[in-house]
Image (cartoon, rainbow, N blue to C red; front, side, top):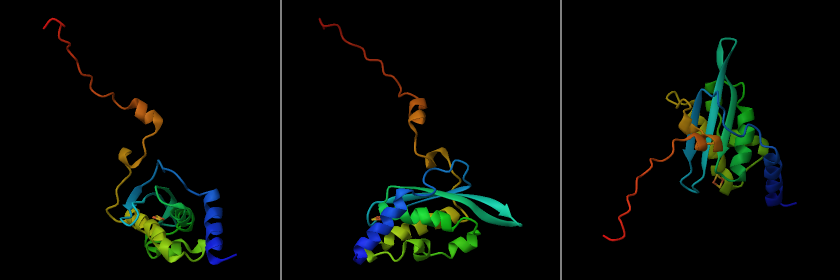
Length: 160
Ligand code: FES
């Protein structure tokens, strides 16, 4: 098996059962980043808890319009940062966050950087608190959205 096949197998294995995929409704912070290189986006939600007087990451979840590598890295990264303080999580680079997947090929390094940037965005002191806009609209929300304003169309009588 060559290096490329080995990498593909590792990614395929990781995305078979991605961990922490989806919105985290009770999140304390959310970070969203987009990669100008490829147009991919990644959003990460983070929830904190207190352990022994320290604020640590209780859970992190993600959604992405990124490639399979971004999904795989985000999946392992959300597991790696669980239980870490903000300071500890911020010391982790894209390479650290993707370490369980093995080395990434040069063209895929930015996928891990996308995850790192989303995490940094969510952990920034001024990170956004989740709002309704941070969540993808569900079918139910779309159906509950106010209908567009109706317009009255007046038809002229045909003899005018
Ligand atoms: Fe752009 Fe992977 S996130 S190719």
